[in-house]
Image (tube, rainbow, N blue to C red; front, side, top):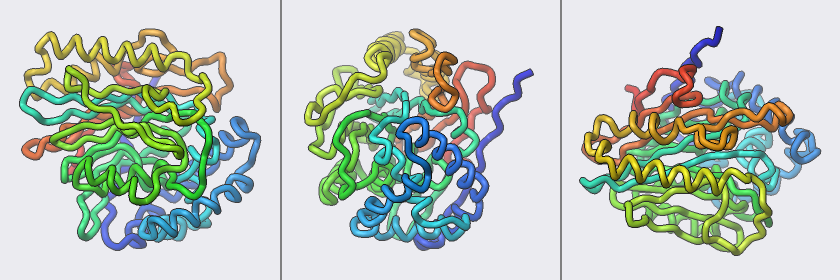
Length: 366
């Protein structure tokens, strides 16, 4: 008999960067230790390196983080001290995408949509290794002089998927491409900087002013006025605007950024992209999304639960022909409303529509 997935822990992190980090590390100590073990296995399988070798690579990024974002370096030190590990362990978690050159098999589907009343909906399925699911946490981060962040995060990692009380939200799609440059920001740090911004324009200015990111990734960033697909790479960025449906959709391959070498990897990514466009446009044309209270439910049921081209479907399924550590599945779905009058998100952990996911968790939850 299958049991429903339990809700992840909900953390309120406040104060100075060090205080935020200490609280994070103390509350998620066991999950951080488990994350290190999970990623050690992933590194060994994907890159033929162990955790100690990954930490050596992480030192280059630690220096970059300390130089470009000292407040997040201080927060990472706090996480390490709170969890009783070395700061390089925490930096390794935060730059795991860069250490592996994108060799982890992430597979995510994201979309933004401008509603008829002008506000933005931002949503995605996040697909990754099932072992990571037990280390997901909901985080509310309160910092002086910055927007309050509501984030679905991983233990030990400072930035992920979510939104803030200035109505700025982020989604992430992994891209596998070369090169990787350690003098630029890790993508999870870039996500946190976006979530510390008060607008899409400020997020873009911040990333550009700091020299960009060290690995190729796609961040879908929205505020209440605009959505922009940031096809980011160490060699330059391309920004995707909303289409005729008021949408930006993305999966795990670059659409317009041809500045880096991107070998073929997830054959299902183009198929998922066409599928998410077809399904989302269909529900928009049907008019069913005109009733605001139904938007999250409809998107989960009609778009993000879709199993077409399984296992590489929008709702990702484990491929049991692959080794256990390299399988991926949908770990959570989030639908955000970036509306100043009705700001919030609905999250289900697990595969939407499977019957095994958590009940809907509202963010903010207090």
